[in-house]
Length: 428
Ligand SMILES: *Cc1c(COP(=O)(O)O)cnc(C)c1O
Image (tube, rainbow, N blue to C red):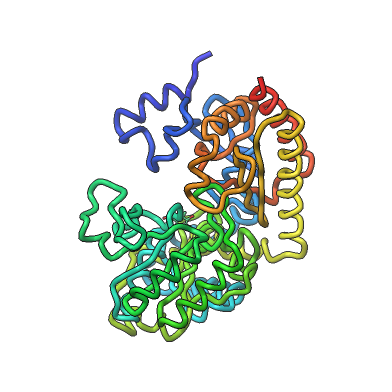
């Protein structure tokens, strides 16, 4: 049989660097041939060989109501008929901004952008403009998009400034970024004791999904809120992944915390390029044209993207949506944990709302270092058996996985049966 995925990869590599438009898609960390996707519907995606997969990537989170949901497609179609982009304000933008503020009570003002990267980059600029301070804190293993000052790895000492984690980022650009270990309340306090008055903001994934799934301790979360408040530092919850995913109101609703600024993306665009940042009026009013912090975008608040987002937000607020989503995720996690135990494979899975993590170690990670010490090769082996048997996860051990409302208990059982096979193969 000709493998169209392989043929397309060869062709793609001749024109697109590495054959992909975002690096993890290249399967670099798991090996093998990336699947070129032809179409998606509900809980399934199909590749160019015609092979069908039960999908737990969900476009990395947005596909929470299932792929190509008929109501979302209809909303997009209707919006498109009226024009693809105006570069002028629209009523639909107000509606989605109002909707976001309703879902997240910490958000008093909202601005729409086109990607999570833009949202976090601007939120940080805004925090710096508002506080008139330069330094920022991020945590190891948290991803906030690919703007220069956030592509940082920890420096040599705990409180030394970060080093660029990407070529092309001048060390000057990252010298204001401090990288601390996630869940480490001690180092956070130490850092604020030493230079709290210089820190513009702390940005974090309040439930981390870019180093598998790492939950914060209640102590860590509460200390963060108290210490930032005390020092006049802006607390930014990067809920690009967790917003409308771990719960309707995001991680902040789960933790009962009011951050100063919040960034969102993924789910709120329903699969279209839409993201947002918002928060306290006093801070948000520093943004141009009201204030001196600049931000703009030709396609910001794009009408077709907003239509997809609005319909998605409507669907997820229907009765029982999160109860159903959470039950499906918990069913899968329970089944996987039991299957691994039965096969004698060291493994644990955990979840929150419609998000889950698969982890090849005996207990769940608290930090990036924990995650890096897990059995990454075990994940690779598991990943490929699942994929060959029609179940797709993100092609990296460091990625969280996503359930959609289009999955069913029967599909989850089917997935668990495949996992039994995979764990059995691993036990050999
Ligand atoms: C995906 C993600 C981003 C980046 O969003 P893009 O739309 O890919 O630019 C930022 N922060 C978090 C937490 C994310 O998961």
